Image (tube, rainbow, N blue to C red; front, top):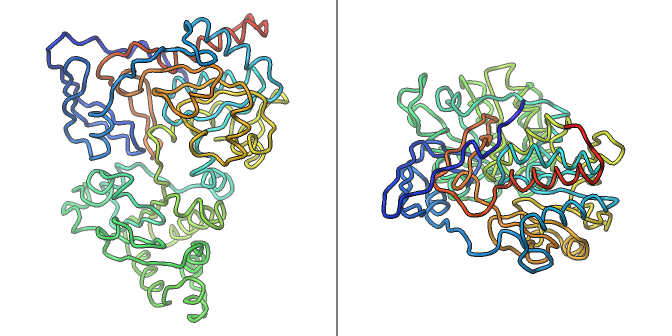
Length: 451
């Protein structure tokens, strides 16, 4: 699989005072990647975003290009060529280079980042390692029964959300994909569906559910295995089930009856499941439950992904290395070991000696030991705006915003690739342009003559 340069999708400059309408633009704020947005642009500013949710409107309408240099070296403005040269030198001088982020970059740029990691024998990791990384591990051990969001909209008559709060994190999820759409086999839309929400607290999404089940905190694994046992027809102790899960046994038996009776069941699970006690074991349990349910009816499970192209990052890294995140190339071939090669760990353990962050801000959300070590090593940062990470980077590139200023390809949370239709150009280079220039210089330093 190959991609063309993002320059192919570069938008044309606006004529001053003229209104320009972009049909079927794609919102890259969250994993829903809604591709039916109509943008109105005037003087290189988006003034209207039809059909966008509250988060999407904020993403588009508040977008502005920062008036700052495209490149900073050691805190001082520099030319792009100077930045590319310094970046390549940093990455090739290191003994344990790391590359991290990628979730808010197009697939074309992600592909180049993986190539750089390969050339420098470094470690590449995505933000998946701190959100749905446990799911990526579980997919390898259990497998995944999956479908597209289009199938959910047309067929899903039992919709379950586990440890996920789409009303706040994915506002159009209900209306566009899961609960409200009138589908081919569900002509009455919401009236033809039953919605179940399982969580440790009553979120705003609970108002949209027909059934809300509040389990004990950190007891997702026990709850899921209760359902697995019921799916297999095993006898359970009702008192033990209630003590372990915090929910009456009759509630679980009623839910299982509904799950067996539906025609097409869907479980969307979020970080409330993957990043609590159990982690990858929780993900394995929900994937195994889905597999068990297919002995009775059609059932699928999908993670509710956050960032716009985090699913694309997993796909690109997977088809380039064989693993979704936390991949080390130090021996000349890819190795996968979460907890050892994931960025939060390589930094906290003071193993990395240089690196590059792309469309992420680890200085704002990593642990204190990881942040301290990152600040002590030379690294390159690519971002659309100034962040705590770009401020301490040896080389900081200000890049154009994907989906608004540059095009390319992103993956929706259901692994469907979506093209981007940018609205107006940016004076800053794209992620793809910066990474391609760095890769060429890395290859030159390493004496690589072939492509």
